[in-house]
Length: 346
Image 1 (cartoon, rainbow, N blue to C red):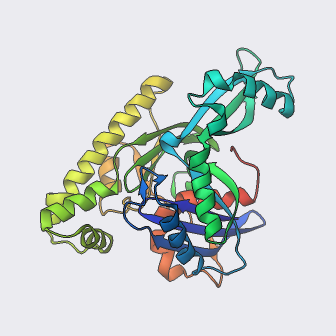
Image 2 (image 1 turned 90 degrees about the vertical axis):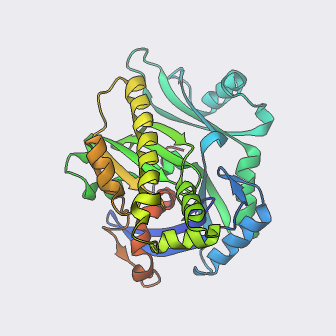
């Protein structure tokens, strides 16, 4: 399946193939999103988003139709609940429907539900069931935008699950023990930043931070008298005066560091663990020069810029010279593309 990450700043799509346990990049496309058609990852203008997806689709082979996409943030509620281990999936579903009203703060006719048994609780012996719900209107807005552009939506995932699923693609960048350690993944979006704590193939924790690359873009626009479009272009091309490093870049990086420090402290306090072991940076603003080193120095945690495509071969239809430098922004899209190969959490 084509993994389609619909963000407020751009739409990113990745198609992978798999052979003998190795992945190959078959297609990539990135299309800018018009301003203000999404707010905090919530689609406000389905027609405009559909048109942008249509432009993205024209960059791909016409035969590519099946896609996986994701919802996120405040749009999603996830809870781990304990259930009778003797119940099969049908019985679990019936029991969840009976209990859902006390678990979900929305009328049931307004939400879409799914669940997955994740194992057994060591204390009670009951099954641990991950229940996830999203407003149906949120799900349908993405499905409608994709369908209007000619795609068929096979999976609507959760961004945090997609992000964590793609982390093993980056383990080669980290020390050899990374797959047994706690890895904090920081995906810096335009308006929101997603923090996930991952260990092996398990998502331990996720949290949205109300901070993103638009803060940097707006600072550039205000400080240098540029339009938002000019500021965004200058940011992407690093076309800023030498003084920008301390006028706008350093303040943005300091704010991001503060946000991350608070979020990590909250995780450590609530989980009872002493530390996270590694940090993986992803998202469009993650590649700011010096950001990974700053976080490593200030937090004393080994930090690298995610490169999920770094260990992959590239197919003839995928232009490596055009997209290889944007690999760090494709982690969620890669996680969605991986849904085509094996059953995953949600």
